[in-house]
Figure 1 (cartoon, rainbow, N blue to C red):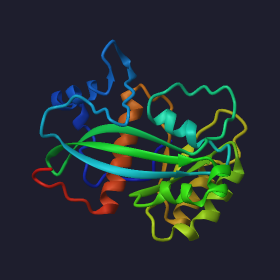
Figure 2 (cartoon, rainbow, N blue to C red):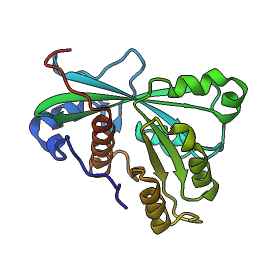
Figure 3 (cartoon, rainbow, N blue to C red):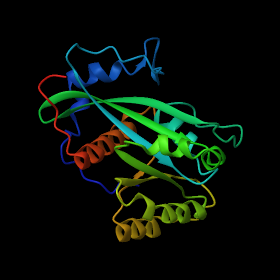
Figure 4 (cartoon, rainbow, N blue to C red):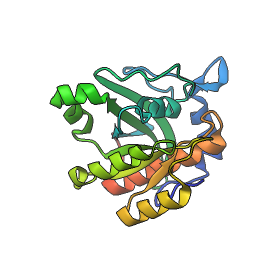
Length: 230
């Protein structure tokens, strides 16, 4: 299953070049090249001085239990097995880095994923506001095993008319309630891009196309221009 977006700016195979491979290696743990490194708020990949950084804030929405926290964990390379549903308390922010070549320049995308639990958001209005405020895009999580997650997405579109909106699709091996054709027709009717979460987050064959497509889409919609110096 492929995403329904085409690249406009990013070189899709740049990460395979010697320069790209060198930077990608910095995203993995030094003692285990199969595990993505966790970067704290004040941490940063060790890359060549002068590499340009493009920061993109992405607010993540979804009905309670749809898998917002799991989605962010998957995208940051954490194990996908969760003991059970635990609602997020307050705001959860995760920084994920991805290198790319755009406009013939090497850059490092810093993707900031923001999400919050539904109960806290309803109780404290400022929480949901903080997650979406000054965001470059909003991603709504659609779980193919839960039809109501698509209904939730539909109910949110009117309030996000001034935002760049996309769908993050969580796949399932059983109890599929939202089929590919229906999802494609819905996205086409609503003019929404959708991104299937990579099934194997430690395999660049899946990870690279996902992040290339995501960064290119958000970047192109924000009409960002990389300056000669930051």
